[in-house]
Image 1 (cartoon, rainbow, N blue to C red):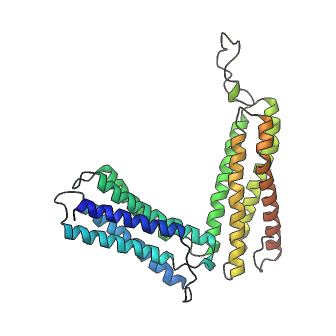
Image 2: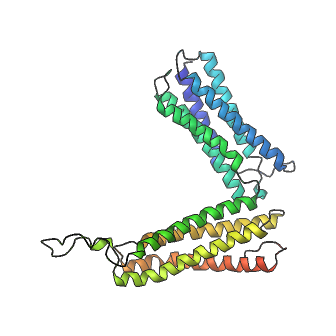
Image 3: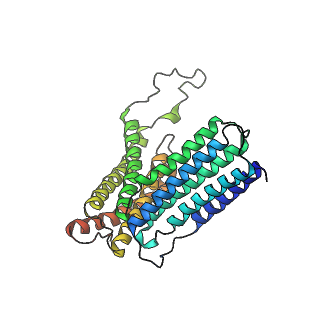
Length: 317
């Protein structure tokens, strides 16, 4: 079998593993879950995958091409490394938290996708020549494998990471809108009037006074979301624990709530840009605002109870 055919088979096998990781769910396992053992094994599996990616890339970077036997060995080693990554991922039980599990799954799929891209890049390049794309793909696998060291080790750390990301999105949306609103006048006022129309043809590029009044209530909601998410993050950092199934589930609930707020703020911010259709903004953003208000209320109640019982479990309400 030729090298190209072996690489095509390898690519197909990697895609099959990726599909199983994306669609499958880790089991609880018969043995008690041991975090140190899991993280050591995951780190080793990622390290070996990085090494196999390097070997594969180097083997096809210059002539002579590896023999059919060596190519088969390279392919098997890559498959074994990837299967080890997937197998260790499945050790992580659901009971450790859905937020943590999602982050580990995302890291695992990123490694798989990187190896698939590398294999495909080698396939489409002249065999025996190292292209810029191949070097980039190899580096992509290295980078994906290195992120295992920065993964959160429990669900509390995972939820803190997720909340920080959500807060960052909301902060960016608020700051961008605040900066846009700083200009009290038409930012295009220096443009010469259109000779035929008699006015500047840029009326859709800035807010009218009526627009700004409507923007006020929208901005208030965005700022409330930012403040509340910031409060949630500080509470989870200070009082969040992942020592019991109840605590882990409550942390996941908070992450789910924040995950709904963040895209809702994004949708709201997008609808605020000129040209504004006031009726459309009010009608289309009503569900968005409802979601934000409902979720903010749930989060605020949960945080209040958590701070009241500082040494008790974290509640979400």
